[in-house]
Length: 209
Image (cartoon, rainbow, N blue to C red; front, side):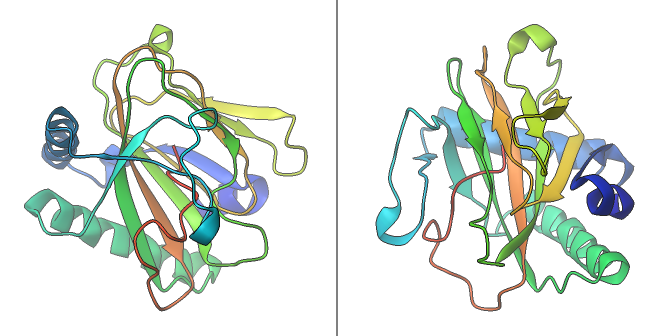
């Protein structure tokens, strides 16, 4: 993973090598329950006073994770291991992470974007974990990843099937979610190099898709 991050800026891999089927099922059940209870917030773009809800850019809903449920605690332990591994192998100086669930209903999308404002150097690495059993190409919702050197060049697509994970450099790799044709669940995480957490949502351009 770290070699691909250095060479291409992103990597796609099977998370089932380090997350158990039981944990993946529990995370999927948790986000599904939040969605069905209408407990997820409309996602926005920008930060601070520029934070807005623009449905022409994105139409997903999110719920921030606090690590206060058994599945979230188990996930956070795994994410902490990823943070330490990235620091040991790539010397990125990552100090902490934040994460949230994201739901896309049929017709929802997220236009091409970066996960961090260039030069801010807070969000360094993005990670997305997909939680959709039986996802097919005709279901849409594919993640499209663009060349970090030429944002008009498509360099990869990822089907958001359960257990698939994508990791990429937050400031460098443009990406988008094409329109979903059925409800789509994911979990997004950002590894950061700053020490003091911002209030939830203030520093967020939104999920990594």
